[in-house]
Image (spheres, one colour):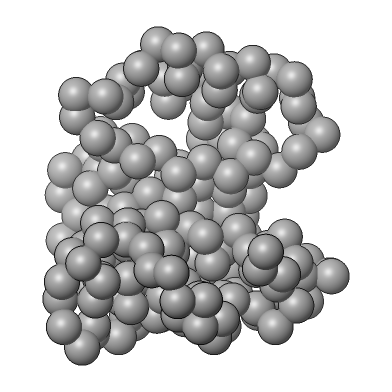
Amino acid sequence: AKVSSIAIKALRDGFKHEANIFYDINVRPPFFDSQGLDEFLPATASLKCNQDELSLITGDSAIDTAEDVKKLARGLLGCYVELKHLLVTMGARGAWWFGQNPSDQVWVNAPSPSVMADPVGAGDAFASVILATSLTCPDPDQLDIADMLTRAVTFASRVCELPGATTDDPSFYADVLPPNAVLS
């Protein structure tokens, strides 16, 4: 809403280009204002969206194939100078990672949850693994994108097995985060 938008703008303006901003757009009608995209995307270094959100951002409703996703991702990456990475989740199918170079793209399949209890929180679970991995990697040039994506879709799938998005069992979180991640 308006207060959140003001807070986000203040943070964005305070950091300027000193930070790599990760933006998970989380479209939740009626709480989402697409006009805000023009304010936040130019300062974003890493964008996470799902297939439907990619359609909204690009204004293209025809996302039927992997080639459609690639074309839209490349177009979006070309529109914003600061945008270095685009992550596109495709629900139960898997996820894409795109870098600035056209050859920088990785696809991973998502494992099926053993029991589908509740998909709420899956996107946030995916994003948490991406952020934890990125923040704890000592050398970003050595980041294993396929491994990071695999752990992210695996964790998102496991979250779908929960009745709600969280659990008090710390072991649930331990095996999907990078070995050097610190949980407190």
